[in-house]
Image (cartoon, rainbow, N blue to C red; front, top):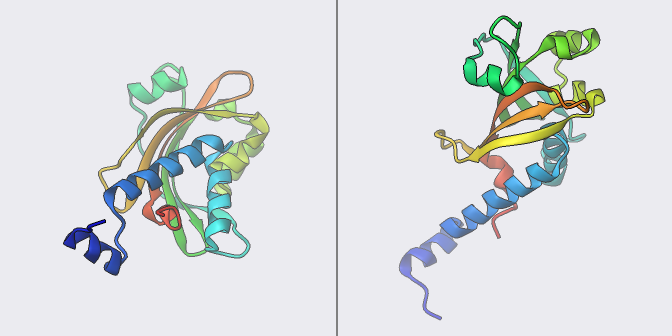
Length: 182
């Protein structure tokens, strides 16, 4: 079998071939879809990559405000006058930022305790709202504009009673591809 000069350099330099990178992104998508929540997925990935011990995911909040547009409100099935909250976080494991997430949510569809924890702690959204027995409905999974990220996911979280309560836009770090490119 002949190997091109580029492929030889790629092997020597440890560069992944584009097909392998695409395969790794597809595995990342599949792992995320198979998980009950992004928090659960990131905890598992952090443990597998041995990024921190224990593999604890924290939500480092940024103090930003963003108004929900009509697309967000439609996805959450709320009229223009319904109060929404916005939360921007870096989801970290140890010193590693694994995901950056924008989250609009309907506070009246959460318990007062959940709203308090979201306002005052570094507990990830998925862990806080776990008692709602929610499921994720992925609206879009695509390559992001930002080269630091491998995958952008837009999803709606739907409670066990069938009501949407959160819309998230998550940007997953390329670091999550480590060990996936075989």
